Length: 195
Image (cartoon, rainbow, N blue to C red; front, top):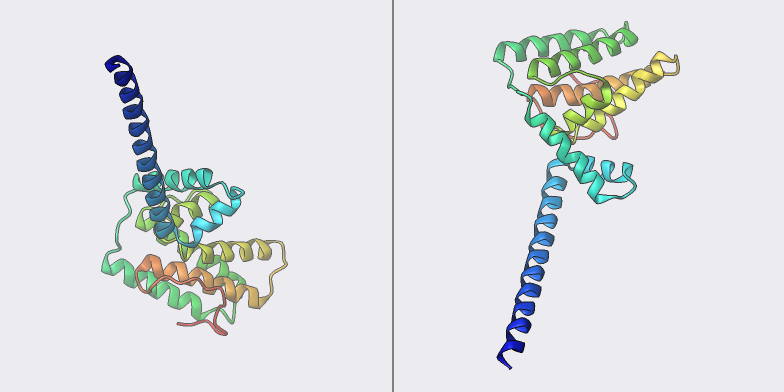
């Protein structure tokens, strides 16, 4: 009778260990999902949607982005750089009425220069946006919206109002990279360019 109890007891212990391990894995997975949702905000949902609702694929992509950006040396700006970039933006913005297309091109360049100065690589746009989403998930949508308008402008399909919106979108990312504002998504840009 003891010999029957020993295998039975061993089987119960094995099942219990497997059950505990499974519950621990579920808890870890839920905590990791929560962490990624908090870190990436709306970007989490966008990536999830792009992967057809596959949580595993979306989270794998977000973790890969995070690992990539963790290898960068992202640095704060020196006060002199903050001043230089701020003054450049003020000059740029002041010439919008006279040259909206030129301001759009300059705003795009200024944002790329600021990204490079902070330590982000300025590779192709999609990779650049993915990198930005790790530390600036709220305003990355502004950056994407601005780039869509840049593409429209390159095809001759953007109105002056579109150009103004693009500059406002660029400004949201610019200010966050400069450390001047709290991040927000410019889903409804203001009626005029703010200084």
